[in-house]
View 1 (cartoon, rainbow, N blue to C red):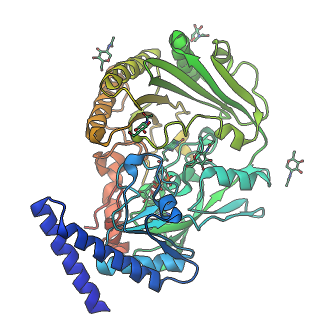
View 2: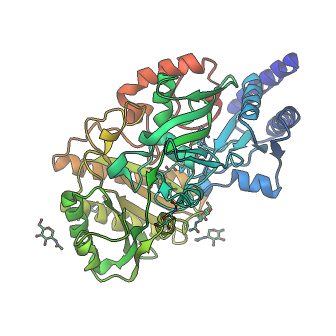
View 3: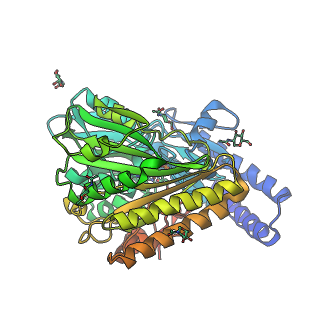
Length: 500
Ligand SMILES: Cc1cc2nc3c(=O)[nH]c(=O)nc-3n(C[C@H](O)[C@H](O)[C@H](O)COP(=O)(O)OP(=O)(O)OC[C@H]3O[C@@H](n4cnc5c(N)ncnc54)[C@H](O)[C@@H]3O)c2cc1C
Ligand SMILES: *[C@@H]1O[C@H](CO)[C@@H](O)[C@H](O)[C@H]1NC(C)=O
Ligand SMILES: *[C@@H]1O[C@H](CO)[C@@H](O)[C@H](O)[C@H]1NC(C)=O
Ligand SMILES: *[C@@H]1O[C@H](CO)[C@@H](O)[C@H](O)[C@H]1NC(C)=O
Ligand SMILES: *[C@@H]1O[C@H](CO)[C@@H](O)[C@H](O)[C@H]1NC(C)=O
Ligand SMILES: *[C@@H]1O[C@H](CO)[C@@H](O)[C@H](O)[C@H]1NC(C)=O
């Protein structure tokens, strides 16, 4: 067996070299595909009855590889749904021995290509779907195959919630392992600040529990470090008492842009109630700008006046009420562009002035008009303003992200969607260009953000790990060298920490 896999490894390497040299599709790719399928068969024959391997075009395979952005999806040789942490270890040992490219997918909302997809062995975490609430510790054990919708629904029975996704459909693992900006962030910090423990399958296949005291290095690295140190099967999060919340979404048309800019700037500068948060989304679609403002109050009614400036603007549609958290999360139109190709990009800022917001509105209209003229069908441009308290990073301990907790940073979220794969690089290039313009405007108005860390879950592919992890890169490399000396996790995509 071992000799056979060394042969596999050699053949894979040879074909990788040939492919690079030839750059063509042909017999080499077909042979490579056969080798990958053989590895899938080895996985299938080694895992326990708790797990299964699926092949195209089965329904299970199709669901396993599905992503929010179609540009984040690849046709893998097979998908595997591990049903136990031990089986995750079995799979890791096989891909390690054969140096097979693989992917780990939780909710599939990565907006960068190849981060949770592969042409090799696609691991879908879907069977890790438990939510175990422990009232005595006030924590919940959450399986990493879940989306936040399911977590909120399960915890609502106990009148508690966790700091998770703000809109529907996002996976627990990528969100938490990257950071996690939530509706509870002014009160409790990032999602990763609320982690008590991880169940982790290490790159060598061993299953371990990671807490701040059991393995401080891994606990530091996993909070921001995604799949660099292994595969997380369960996350234990602090829970918070949760009654009904108040809010939802307001839809505005472009004639009210000035008023929304002013209300957003005013809220950003003057809100002092940590239970109140907003997201203002400047969108461009089908020839015009529109705005969604999502309003959140962590309680069944809004205190006097807090959102009045928004509520006074004439809205094209209003969906505001006292409702369960899950209902508020599902009220935003987050799935409307699912299935299109997509990219996120970000600028870290410290405030949203009227001047900066006007630059962002101009970028929305300028790039929306420009890109739609070239690609009239399926083009969508969105700039999401997420003001938090400057104290948002003071709730947690040292973690891979953010590299510094001294300065509060708000990640502007730029999102472009389009419908043709040949335009992928073009759209990514333009989204970078727009971020550069906005960053320059923020610097010009005096914001100290020239070297501010970027949020991994919003940053576009090509961003360097130095820009995300800053001064933490050296420590992360040492942790990587200790726990993944053979760089097994380098066979999966993402923001990669080298193991040397
Ligand atoms: C519509 C939409 C709304 C969003 N809203 C927010 C928001 O409000 N706040 C915010 O902070 N972010 C938000 N994001 C960004 C989001 O946090 C990231 O896309 C996140 O990575 C998604 O997690 P996922 O599990 O769905 O992604 P996946 O694509 O499944 O995974 C993302 C990365 O995590 C790795 N990973 C997944 N599972 C595991 C695991 N079990 N162990 C180790 N590594 C793993 C993957 O390999 C991949 O590199 C949003 C994204 C979208 C598309
Ligand atoms: C949750 O809150 C509701 C409303 O206050 C109450 O009726 C219910 O008994 C609570 N449930 C639990 C499990 O505490
Ligand atoms: C959004 O899409 C996800 C699948 O990614 C689905 O599970 C979720 O229910 C959808 N949400 C809404 C509100 O339709
Ligand atoms: C926003 O705040 C400014 C002063 O800070 C105030 O003059 C203005 O009226 C406010 N905007 C609205 C729409 O209330
Ligand atoms: C709007 O944005 C475009 C692209 O960045 C820029 O060329 C133009 O000068 C901007 N217009 C204004 C009025 O700022
Ligand atoms: C995207 O392209 C596909 C295939 O060409 C087409 O069926 C679909 O309608 C397009 N979607 C949009 C939103 O333009």
